[in-house]
View 1 (cartoon, rainbow over the protein chains, first blue to last red):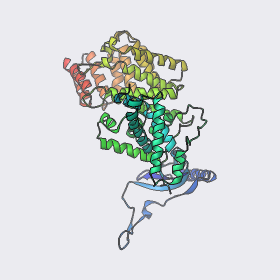
View 2 (cartoon, rainbow over the protein chains, first blue to last red; view 1 turned 180 degrees about the horizontal axis):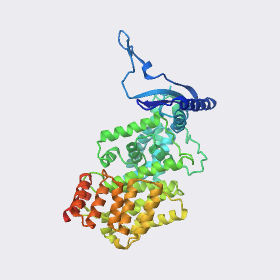
View 3 (cartoon, rainbow over the protein chains, first blue to last red; view 1 turned 135 degrees about the vertical axis):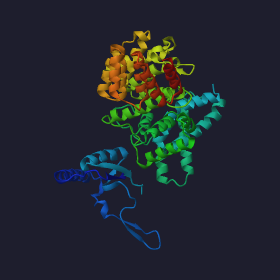
View 4 (cartoon, one colour; view 1 turned 135 degrees about the horizontal axis):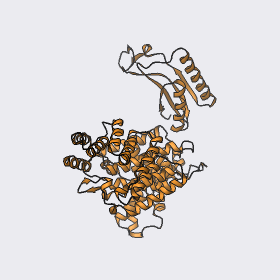
Amino acid sequence: MTQYMLSVHHVEGEPLPEGEDMQRMFRQVDAFNQKAMDAGIWVFGGGLEDMSATTTVDGTGAEPIITDGPFAESKEWMGGFWVLEAPDLDAALKLAVEASAACEGRVQVRPFQAV
Amino acid sequence: MSEPSEIERIFREEYGRVVASLIRRFGDIDLAEDAASEALLAAVERWPVDGVPPNPGGWLTTTAARRGIDKLRRESHRDAKQQQAAMIVDPTPHEPTGLVEDDRLRLIFVCCHPALAPEARVALTLRLLGGLTVPEIAAAFFVSEATMGQRITRAKKKIAAAKIPYRVPSAQDLPSRLAGVLAVLYLVFNEGYLATSGPTPVRVDLTSEAIRLCRVLRSLLPTEPEVAGLLALMLLTDARRTARFADGVLVPLMDQDRAAWDGSEIAEGLSLVRECLAVNRPGVYQIQAAVNAVHSTARTGADTDWSQIAALYAQLFSISPTPVVALNRAVAVSELDGPAVGLAEVDRLHLPTYHAWHATRAELLRRLGRYDESRSAYDSALALIDNDAERAYLTRRRDEL
């Protein structure tokens, strides 16, 4: 089994679900999460606070540098992600289709390096 | 018989089978390719002395497998477990999917996987199944060897890192995945047949390779009518290859010398179209093949059954509603109902970035006697064209006005 990160990506300016739409999206995501747990492929997952809550840390120098905001200014931002186990890319892509439909956003699939 | 060129030919013919079987065995594309090249060297050494073995493909596979195992033994950085796994003969059990299992079939679905970039799918398919070298593929697509090498390397890395499975898709996923494979083969064919750029109007190496790979696919999936449809489409189109140019100038279908068409390719194409009709599961390639069958059976251009062609394009539009299909239907309509009706339909489509749209308008405006507008439509088409033979044809048509 390989671990894949399924990350949800948004583009600045795109409307996000609100009110009843948001509740529906949450229910869909809960159902997807439960299904992944029941299938024994769940590793981790969750939604992220929005970009304004981001801090960037550079500990590569003598003194750490702490900066408000993301590493790179970008119109695209990650709203949350899952880490799930799948036997191969086809299986991971199938999960991503379900995940994308559940969270109503575009999902990027990326394998973790083999340990 | 065992001339170097003959050995090269056999190797090229068997390459896909050899490499596909080694990839299943070793789970490593690079190792499979290296082992296959070593087997070629061995063949070049041995066959001129011993003669070509009765089953050259089997000989190459066995020799390559032995070289691959030797290489794994030499490489100390591979852990023992992996070495052992690779040395088990046929480690992958044949899955009872109900489909014909062939390593080449698994491989073609890997090469044409939707998670790979489209240009990488084409390159990988030609490299691993077609046995073309990286310099050959680079030359075919007018990119540097370094660029093509990188493209292929990157795709192979992704296959390994993202774990694209070495497997024929399930029956449920097969139609959509097969469409992806057929699109790659048709792209290779068209790149050869229409040669978007460069001085050579047709690149026979690419058209014949696409036909050869489609034949392989057909032997692996004999009951899929779209595979037969694509093969028929390519054969019927390719049959007109030599009649399509005169002194470097494109000759349009209606003006071609039909006696110069390849009779055996047409016969095979027509028989495949009949086979598809009997199966009665139409698809985009089968319908396009049927259109070409109508052209192929008309004794002269004037005998063309345009009503049948218009009906086929209407059917095609109902499953594939693209502007290009609509343009083709409009061309058939203008042959049936006259240039005024055809032009109205063409104008409605409005495809200003597509050279064929301008060229079609130019032709219809000419027939309507609207020469100034026709001339400017030819100019617009010429501004968008890369193929020299087509440019020469359109320039001549414009200058005849």
